[in-house]
Length: 68
Image (cartoon, rainbow, N blue to C red; front, side, top):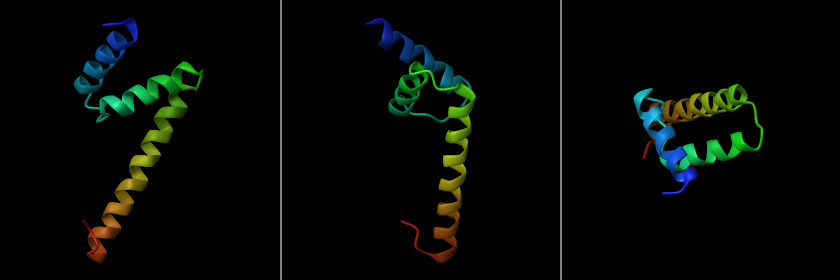
């Protein structure tokens, strides 16, 4: 296992322990974004906002009866 794979595995275990809810693919993408120099707090804020918007969509779909 190369160092990047090891980093991903460790980060994924921490993700699970903290119940962050990120799958390995998403976590890998986030790690890549962070490696480009993006502020970690800014990335976390974006993820939180996306989750809020997703929940709003799911709520509106369930209220209108168009849920999958």
